[in-house]
Structures are given as C-alpha cells and as structure tokens.
Amino acid sequence: MKEEFIELLKSVNREGMDKLLNYIEKTDFFKAPASTRFHGSYEGGLLEHSLNVYELLKEKLSHKPYSDTVTASSETIILVTLLHDLCKANFYAVDYRNRKNEDGVWVKEPYYTINDTIPYGHGEKSVMMISKFINLSLEEMYAIRWHMGFTEPKELYNTISSAYEKYPLALALHESDLEATYLLESRK
Image (cartoon, rainbow, N blue to C red; front, side):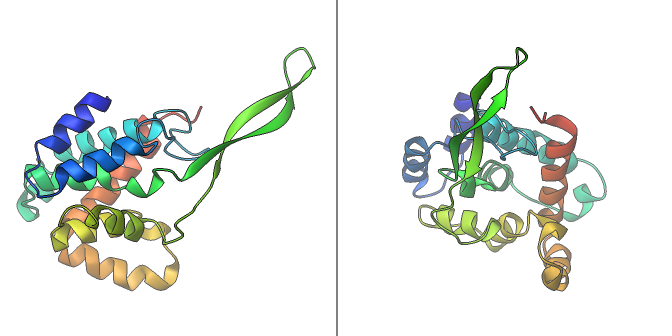
C-alpha cells in the first residue's frame, strides 16, 4: 500500500511534491492508525483509509450527479483523498492499560491515544501542513478543510453548506470518507 500511495503522489506535478513526500516519510503516516477506536485503529490504518477514500471518490465522481457537477482532475482527486488526514501523522501515541486475559491473568495491553502537539483543528490542520510544501487550489483546500462534514460544531453548519454548494467536490470527499470509515474499514 505504501508504494501505491507514493506512486500516486509522485504522479502529481506540483512544485514541492518531493519535499512533501520526504516529510511524510519522516512521520509515522504509513504506520499510524486512522483513529483510536472508531475505524482503522491498527498499525497502517491511516494509509489503508486514505487509499480507500481515493478509490471511493474516483468511483463516485464517475457517476451522476457528481459526473455532471464536478470536474476534478486526477491530480486533485489524488491530493484531496490521500492527504485529507495528513493531520493524523504524528498525532497518535501508544499507551498501555491493564486487562485480564482469557486465563484471568492481568496483562499490559497497548492502545492508541491522542498526542496532539499541533492543536489546529482537523481539516484546516491538514491544509496548513500540505501548504507548507505544495500549493493547493481553492477547491482542494475547501474539500480537505470540510471533509468532516456535519461532525463539525453546529455553529459551522451554514458555512459547511455554503462550501458544499460552491465546491461539490468537498461534499463528495466527505461522503467517500464516511463510506470508507463505516462500510470498508474494521474496528479491530
């Protein structure tokens, strides 16, 4: 999966892509979980999730109504899907808790916890991190920023609706993210 991810990003012709890939390689992105417990909460879950979202968005944009309203390039699709959760790189840490095993013996069990050293939100944090290396179009920024949809605070619902009306790609990315999370990925 790592090789596929890297090859897809290398196919994007943006100045600074080599620096972005070098940065990603230095993080735990390829080994990180996608979440602490909701989906992909295992080593490599974030990489798997990103590729799942890529495949789902590609498929979604080939059908109506999106095929009539979204004209995203293959580069844009690669960028918004593979990097929408870049903010989760170096975000999780492993901790331990005690639990009884099947023999009734207490053992230390590893689990993922959050260690947010850059508290800058979620989608906006990914946009910020990517923008340190490559330029994103407005459509790409909006898609990544609002990919969490209506899980954002209710005070932002009007803003999210406006973003989805202006950039339907953002809505399509949100839907693909949800589909990957709830339909494709396990909750080990």
